Amino acid sequence: MSIKNIEIDEKVNKNELDSRREFHPVENYNPTHNKSKASKIIGISVIVLIILLVIAFLVFTFLNYRNDKIISGISIKGVDVSGLSIDEAKEKIQNYINENLPENINLVHNDYETSIPLSALNVSFDIDSAVDEAYKIGKSSNVFDNSFTALSALVNNVNVELSFSLDEEQLKTSLNDISSKLPDTVVESGYYIDGDNLIVTKGSEGNVVNVEQMALYIKNGISNLTLKNRKLDIATSTQQPSEINIEQIYNEIYKEPVNAYYTQDPYAVYPSENGLDFAISLDEAKEMLKEDKSEYVIPLNVLYPEVTTNMIGTEAFPDLLSTYSTRYSTRDADRTTNLQLAASKINGTVLMPGETFSYNQVVGARTIAAGYKEASIYVEGEVVDGLGGGICQITSTLYNAVLYANLEIVERSNHQFVPSYVTASRDATVVYGSIDFKFKNNRDYPIKLVCSVSNGVATFEIYGLRSDNEYEVEISSYITGSTADSTYSEAYRILKQNGQVVSTELLSKDTYKRH
Image (cartoon, rainbow, N blue to C red; front, side, top):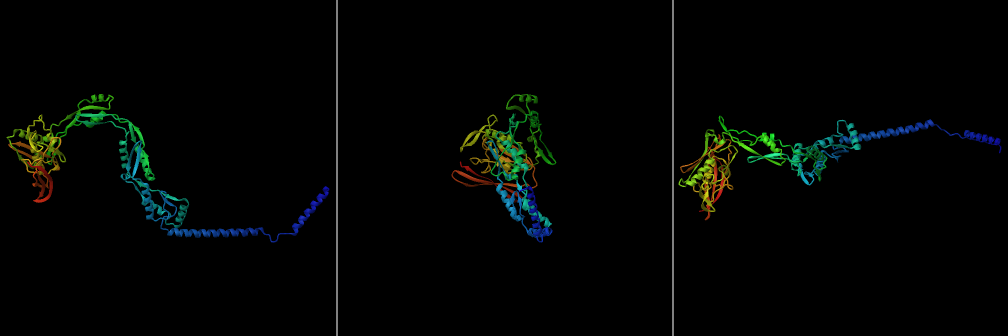
């Protein structure tokens, strides 16, 4: 085929295509009309969707307005409280706290373990405020804002924090106490007085609790409820003991003696006080501390006042509170000597309010060096000679004077046998080192003990200051029964005012051997 023929064929084909287009048109074709129709459908759909959303929103708003529970999506301390009433939420949170709080905060340092009772810290969670805050979410005065808040909570969730409080001062006190009890704690330098010596001790390096760090750690653990079934490692730091400051120690122990004195308007007694000083110079003490030792002994010197309390005359004690006397035989010279020695030790003793008198402490050991003689005493039911025999008569005389002065009996024991100088249950025996007689000045004013032993009569007088509501004192004692071997008795102190019995006090029930 020639090139010419190809060109003719192409023209023919083109003419055929044109003719086909001309004789086969698309009927009623309108692009603009179709686009408009689609837009209307989309518009209607959007409007319907908006209407549905508005209706749904209004329904949701209505339901949310009627809701008297906590809205959905709300948690307190990570605990979901959605749909709960205030009381239900409080109960749920309280149960959660109870389940996750330990009874004790357990602490450990190497092999040492200890704990702090949670009850001692007064831990308190503010559940009411947290639940109230959770309940108010989505419940403002604007119902539409409430709906948006509720929708946001559903999507994002809202967690309300739970505040708490504790006794932080007590927590730190407990931690400081633990610090002092660590097996490897720092040992501080210190001192104490032993008799006539000052003992100064050198400290040593050790560990102490980092109180601030541990307090914060424990507070966070309580707040986050993560301490149950756990042992916390105690945060510690190494600490050196403080240097011995001998000048400071000297200033702390040095004391000038104080003389006793009294006033009469109003009546008041001011007791004497012993002073204290180093028996060596301060420079000598400093030189002593230069030695590498763990303990240093510095001698002390007691400074005595010129006027002691017992030197104050009876003019400072205007009222005779009580008196009591017993008789003794002047023919027994050794026994009389013992009575006089014991009485002389007690005579003039002044007891301040609240102070306790100890017979053995005041009279001291009954020894030959003290001047005591051999006289009759009871030993295992038999009458034998013993050093200091007879001084229990002084004790018994004092006991009765104390009863009539309405003073408090602290310690008293009866004899094996009923003595001759007082009746049953009116005696008091003493044995140095084992049996003592003690009483307490329970009055508001000091008392003075005055004792005399002469001409066959031992007498105690107790002076002081009578109060406006002073009692009349009666002592009643009697035998309650007896057997072939024993006698039983009782004694009572009866207090009266205006002749009327105010109280009756059982003093003792005693058992004596029969001769």
